[in-house]
Image (tube, rainbow, N blue to C red):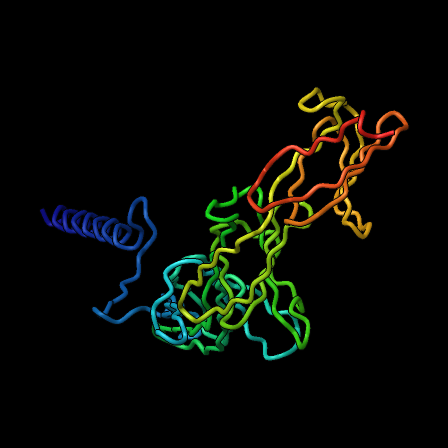
Length: 311
């Protein structure tokens, strides 16, 4: 009995040491994962690893633009073309950073200096702006109006494909000093800076021309009808009155003084002429035939040259 007790006590001690070692191994090496450190967090305070908020220089600014007529201060609702240039402050060609054809555009820009330009037909206005923060409302004043032109002979309007208009800015003693627009069509809205203009209307492709001096007022449309005193004549070389025209005839229309107004080749070409007196020369198969005739305003007719009436 004295020998058994120490043996039991030794076995109990060994079992206790084995259990303690297993417990220690479990605490220091968890199965399947690496040890995770405990990091306390504070609510509402961002960590240093988060991106900082954008600085003021990176924020975009919205510029709301609009244009008004100079005299009436009335908002312009159509016909505008906007461009925004980067203002470099030097003589180099500025870069276009935005453009729009809306009457009231909104431009999103980075902070900086810009030139806002608006065109209303041939009229325009511009303004330098500095964009820093917030939204901006910019209104440009345009001193401009418009012309709407028509052509007529007596009370009859001229077809749109038969008449065209050229608009000039007079300079010194020259009424056609500077051409603004050529070949404008009837009823076309011609937007121009406020001022005086010289208008030339051409009916047909010969000498039927009318001129007029017109004034454009800011915010208003000036309508004008240029009345021509002219007619369209059809040229023919025939063997008898009302007879069939000879094909391949070369015609020349001259003034009584010998100035050539119009030349044409064919059986029956047409030409629009201002009222007045003319000389018609017809050439066919080596022979020349002539006839004097008169054009009366609004009287379109045939001009026949008789072969038998010429030697």
